[in-house]
Length: 325
Length: 300
Image: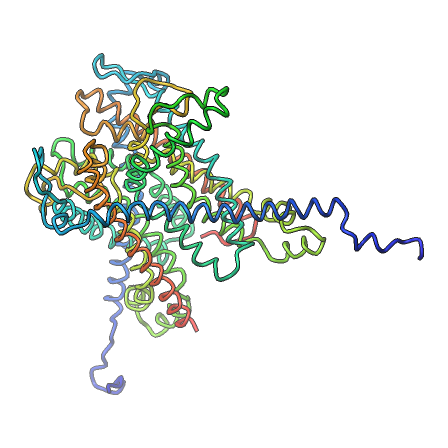
């Protein structure tokens, strides 16, 4: 047992002022450098991607965005086909995933018995943990053939008059990519929406019930309007995840370089998938630079989407009087 | 009084009936949506387990891949497992200290504006597509030097940094200020308060964040395609100065191959990867509840 000896002739000062000041400065300095490093890292990412795409930028300019073909033989590259594929797949996935995710969130926040809530929440989050390459492997070998054999012909015969549902010849299609992306963004949108729904004040819900509404009317009148902004942010984040996904899409979409096809049941390509596809086969500096250009488009999109989502979240939080950290 | 027909209140009219039917229908749809999500998870995990478990054998873990194998050569994916171990290990060694330091700065030192700025940076960094990170590291480290396991590690570290930092910021914020004030009031300097009093309270949360981040990047393929994917042909499976094969890249390459043998190995590797990731996320979940309880107890 040791007691602090205040009467000793050499009073021990455990922390001398100077050492304390030095330690504080050191920790603050090192931690500050790390924080600065994170900001610099983001800047460096933008700088490097812009730098890499400079050759392609100066050769094609903004025409890159509207030119369709990717032609290494004649050294002429364009992103329009991939932009189209990216838009179709990610918007399609968002359209499929959002209603499902809202249903899951409502189930978990309003309907489910207590004992089922925890496990189902954990399962939905586990879905998000499955690596994209595994989902892609499943998509190419299990899902693709099933869709090709059963789902696509049915949709084609029922809705074939719409050009989106044309004839199918392979399992590696835009539609397969949409389904795979739906699976990947579903847990993101669902878990954010669930938290938003759980945040709706109980008094508001009880007030609605007190007016004699059914549960669905309460949800429509109270929960949805209250969580609207947050759900929009969740959808934007899901969209961001969908258009940036490279691997699973590359595996199932069929790597079609020929441009724009409105038939969902044909092969396609996206920005991210094209980059992932060409990792071994890029031959000329101009083609490599064009891959950087594709990455630049993705990067610009992702910056836009994330800043937008953050702004929405902050505005919603401020409106609801929550503390924004 | 007698003019009021009270029985109308008791008798469910058509309108009420319709409202109830709509309500019940919507409830059923929500149940259905949850069932679909659970079913998808079940189907994916079941497909991987069914195909992967039967292909699982010792060769997978002990024998390396043979490039350009002709005929019936026994090969596994030992090189890929070794490479993943090395690359993810180095990535964690880079991202974990940096992420913790960023969190310490944000939570313990920074003012409001800086805190928001760095927070937004982390969120944006987290939203950058993995393939773009791959291209970035390709431009930064690979051009002129060639692919290497180290470049792959750096790419994964960039992905891990916002995850670790965010998780640490969240647990640091849970530590009650009374604890800091008590320590500072006893004359303990700021840096020792932070490192000796506050940080130990958050170890559980930081470990949780780190495990989740490892589980996330262990399955990442896109950042490695441009940084460490040509590793099959050289024998060095452990040296991060060379390009290393990894499990996700191996699955990706094997899944694009037409050979059923390659598919079989892809499923086996996917099974091992999935087992690892599920185990990691479940234990992280368990750790998270435990450490949260500990902090709350300390707060009392």
